[in-house]
Every structure is written in C-alpha cells, then in structure tokens.
Length: 396
Image 1 (cartoon, one colour):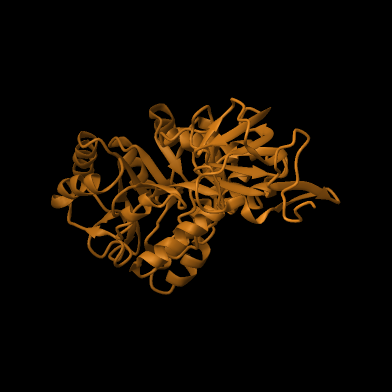
Image 2 (image 1 turned 90 degrees about the horizontal axis):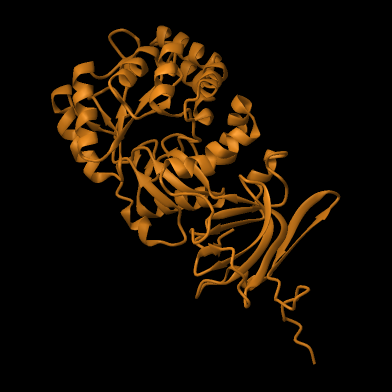
C-alpha cells in the first residue's frame, strides 16, 4: 500500500518539497509541511534564472551553501523560477523605536519582519540597543552595525544618539568605531532652534579630524544629511557615505562620484517629509518650507546622482518612526529614479558587493529569494517571493 503522506517525485525520482505553477498567469506555490523543518540543514535542488546575469542554471544547496555541482540526494525546491540574491536594507535601525532602545523581543520582531520581506542583510545605521545576540541566530538576518548615532545635545531625536559637543567628537567616533562593524554614523544636520531651520552640527575642521580618526580605526563614516551645506561640507571633509542626501547639488554629486562616496537616499523616508513639515510649521515655518522644497525635488536629486555615477543603495530607515519590512516599497521608489534593474541591484547584488558580503556563487551562503516572475519585468515579484532562503533554510 502506498504511503498517503509520501512526497511526490520529480522526473528523476527525487522528492519534490514544493510545487510552483500558475493559475491565470499568476504563479504560486504549494509547500509540503516538512520543507522548512528544523534539524539538519536540508539539501535542495533548484533550477531557474539567476540574477543579475540572467543565465538559466541548475543549483543545489548543501550545508547552507550554494553549489553548481550536482548533489544526488537533494530534494527539489523549485524549477522555472527567478533566483535573486538576498535583499539588503542598507539603512535600518534594529533595536530602536520612536522612544529609543527597545527590548530583545521587539528587536527580534523587527529583524524577523525584515527577513520575511526578503532583507537578509541589514546595515544598521545607528542603534542604542545591543543587538550582538542576533549574530548567534541562524534564522535572523546578518547585521552590519554602525554603533550608535553621534549627535550634539538637543540637536537630534531624544534617546537615539550618543550626544557630545564638538570637542569630544573625535573620542566618541573612536568609541563607536569599536562598537560597530566597520561603520560610524554621524548626524550631519538637524533643526537649529535659534535659526528655525536645518543647519550643520559640526565645525568642518572637527569633523575632518573625526573622519580621519575613524579611518585610523578601520571604520568608514556615513552621515545623516537633509540640507545643502552639511552634505557639501562632509563630502569635502572626506566622508565615505551620505544618508538621505536631499540637499545634494551638482558640485557635491560630482565630488561623490569621483571618490565613490555612497548614497543611501531612503526614498521611503523621504515620502514622510510633507508630514514632518506640517508638524513643525507653526513653530518653525522656515524649516517647513525647506523640508517641502527638499521633498519636491527628491526624484530629480537622486536621478542626477545616479546619472553622475554615485554608488546608490537601498535603505528604508526602518526603526524610529518607520515600520520594518519596507524593502519592497523602497525598491519600487528607486525604480522611479533609475529603472527596475538599477533598483534591484541597489537592493541586492551591488549592495552586497559594497558591504563585502558578495552575491551568489560557488560556495556562497545560500541567502536568496525565489520568485515566480522576472522582477526586471515586474517588480511586484520582489514583494511576493515564493520562498525566502536564509543560510540554506526556507524561512518563508
């Protein structure tokens, strides 16, 4: 008598753990209950179109790693699909909400939400919480940290940053370089209550010494910059990255492109500028006008940066006031800047290379999304992956 619970077999007699097919032109899949079971890492076989190259290939996952050498006893996970290196949220904040540091359970939920959206590598751009325990969890995304934000007293969001005056900036940069994973995050500008508008936080000579100190400690420096002067001064001072960058002008864009200074525009966050302006208008009308102007030219600003050759990457600014799990929305907004393939690279293979993690190759960690449609043609596929695979396990 046959076993009613036995897995179906493919044409070569191998068990099929999941079946992907279409109804009315819309792909979906059926996953057998044991496909993501705990225990030893499963051995998977898959066949599909690998991005970014576009080659149709057969591959296997063994011990959490990708191989293109045949594995006889692997179970078939999916065929006829598109395979995308795991997404990257290059600006998020795990361990942070609108009030400051959160507990481990909340941090876990944030990381799981990002993971389930396909963001398998996170660059945490500043958090007051210690999230090192996440590194011991194979079911949670990899995190590259920038320590804690560094700001001046009363010149940033309460409970977020290590707050120091300029004469202590160099020492604090060294502290956060030791706390992070090769990055330090400065707050470059914020509202100045005396002028009623955005203004830089740091004297140029001080920030130049701070950047040199970070480099001496083996760390790169990035900075939150909304307005025009701060971003120009920080790029001239030798900074490695800019977050948001709404105040970029052509000269600063040219300097960034020449030195390879990264830009993570956080397009999802920029969509909140009108609401921020409305909230501050009664007390700071100049600030409100400025924020609306920065918002109004956001797509033009970012498109000029892309056209000039500035390396641009995807980040959502999740944490604080924004929800986690918005990487799909960020990709869609970046596509309005540079097209679908540009947006996919900014959130996947180019971002992974930039952060030193790499994409999909022989022996690489099997961190990938399996999609039912070509995302270069239909970006909606990124927001509805058939499978999310992290370290060789199907986690969604």
